[in-house]
Length: 88
Image (cartoon, rainbow, N blue to C red; front, side, top):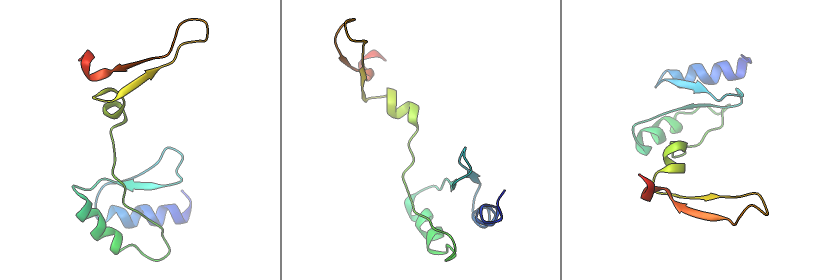
């Protein structure tokens, strides 16, 4: 790890289980609610940048209750939208 990334990871791990993104360009952690995340963000050392974001489960977001657009190859039919919740 780069020393800066290692330092940020070690800092955040004091409070909860912290992880790196797949590319290693960012670290993140899950908190029980926004208020808990905001409290830790307030303690963030000046050498680090940070923000609080709401996480989503991409599979749930994509397939449960959201419209999914299925695109077909031109000449093979038209574009259709399906309400995936109706298929469960």
